[in-house]
Image (tube, rainbow over all chains, first blue to last red; front, top):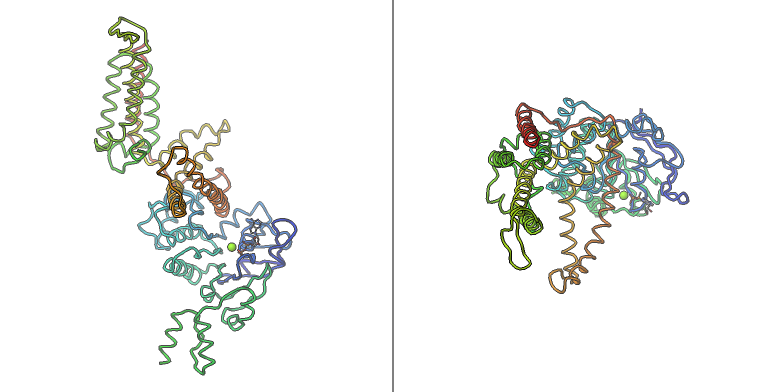
Length: 273
Length: 265
Ligand SMILES: Nc1ncnc2c1ncn2[C@@H]1O[C@H](COP(=O)(O)OP(=O)(O)O)[C@@H](O)[C@H]1O
Ligand SMILES: [Mg+2]
């Protein structure tokens, strides 16, 4: 069964204009979805509908088997579907890393001994060993996002939603976060819904959704969508440099394959030579 | 100047006082505070001084650091002493210089109050120097837990406090950034009349406020997303361990309290 089912969802902040318009899609267990789109296209709004922070005006969202409009199950739902936000600073609540990772577990009423084990496991899994007692303000952006992810993993979630979680980070922080997300998805079978306007980041997903002015205009594997530059351009998205470059090379009669990142492009070119 | 005020600053360490349960330390300071002001017996006061010295010595705080921090606060003690010295009209006249008359009662009263205040400040400082703000908040939350029954939002207050502690450094960094940004735009904060200088801070405070509200909103959303729904049914990750040494310390301070009362009766 699908872990996330979005059916004909519309949402409006002011009750007049819809910023999410009749969106439908599903995400299976262990699947990695990238949601892309221009600033203001409604990505964050859609993301907040997935864990019931916002309730749709029309349509339904069912996450981990729970409908978001049921107040009885909303807390269970949020424990099973964690969310990482854009601003690393404004989502860490507690005075130390370990305390922060434990925050969700405390909310869930997990007994102390189990909580301790789970925090330790999450620290290890996210490569935060040695930072347990560090205060949040003395962490790098990438570390902060990994702490946020650790807090979610400790709850053993089925779904992780990342709302432009690496857009504020430096390249090293970005690749850190992406490595962690890859492991959580590919090894632990967690469904990942990654919101981003960086198509290079989206390239790794199983499916890529494109939002434009609140509407879902595409839902297909990234490689397929990279072949439709017009659609992406209309949505205000910029193809990764490697994809553009490969296209030009093809026009010149070379075959570099289909690289999506600069690294892959370089490798393809090296092979060619 | 602010960096010299050490009340509320934590000095990491592994001393006996550091190792005590924050609840024990809090109760001890409260007992001390109450019963120090009950008795005028010099022997009781001497015991209080001995307790304070013992606390100081076993806390292993470097004396220079401590002295530097407490100097500013000593002004308050001196001021209190002088106030009592000049205002008390009891006992025999010791000095009489024109409008200024000092009575023996003033000397006694002034010394008494000043000594009490000084001892209390030193002991309270020992508490904050050897306990992290987080442990302190935690200790307070647990001690105040029974007040829940009277609808005091203990958990919420403690959480607010701990979030405030978490964000103080963040806000300081932010203030610094804004200061620099405004300086780059030509603002000056270190010249001109006091009025001008104060005025210069308005363009710093406004963005700081706006950003803080934004932060608060995002933080609230993040907490909601992480399944926070109030204190009910919550468990605690931070555990406090009450040990024998805590009980002993409490007995010592309770003993002091009892003696202080007995010396009056
Ligand atoms: N809290 C809010 N109140 C009112 N309007 C909002 C709010 N948040 C976003 N919007 C509006 O909704 C639209 C979609 O925003 P958002 O979902 O944040 O887009 P994205 O995340 O794709 O940049 C924008 O036009 C934005 O101005
Ligand atoms: Mg957004």
